[in-house]
Amino acid sequence: MIKLGVSGVCGRMGRRILEISSCDKDFEIMLALERKGIPQIGRELGKVKISSNPDGMFLIDVFVDFSVPEASIANLEYAVKYNKALVLGTTGLTEDQVSKVRRASDSIPLVYSPNMSIGVNVLFSVLADISRKLGRDYKAEIVEAHHEGKKDAPSGTAKKMQEVIAASGLSNPPAHSVRLGDIVGDHTVIFCGNSERIEIKHQAHTRDLFALGALKAAKWVAGQKPGLYSMKDVLGL
Image (cartoon, rainbow, N blue to C red):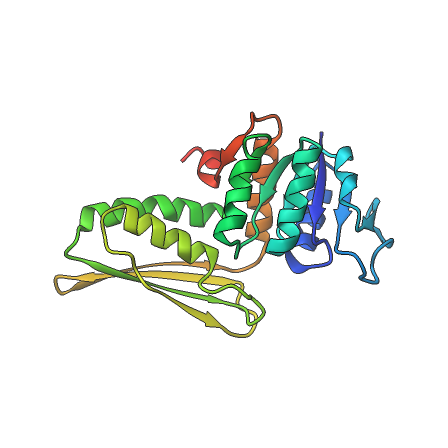
């Protein structure tokens, strides 16, 4: 059984990861972490109490973090301190923060991905293949839409799509962001050239797909050697 810690358990993603993992016989929840000062600290959440003390990581095997950049980097330091595997899905990290993630992976096994969805990660592979085969006669653009509370734009997924397409030989595509209502996550890639157009779209119907992907990564990363991994590694793509 994997002893699990989850960050941001009062937020939408953290709470759902905790709920789903609580029903999975492969996990035992040992740490439900939240930021200091919120009124929920100390309340029972299932079999654990909500804590603001990251030193609780000494109890766990794997820590799952979908919080905000500043909190994630602070949690990263504790994961290294206690030599714990980490699944990191936080987006909006600066280049300096990403460098800290890379350095941490020298010491601990770390899965870092802007999107834990299985479908999106398959899509990354498809986009690379399409981009190579279409060639430079085609241009691409990306449109992504999320709920109005999402702070980073373009999304981490859109940025990854840009990287994949640019690395495959096409020019770096612009990304257009929409922030409306309660949209979970939509990403559309449009390829156009030679009097024809190809559109590829992924829609997230619920946050559960991100939670399920993160927990799949948690099972995979437990026991891995130190290193920086992606969902491509987890899924064997």
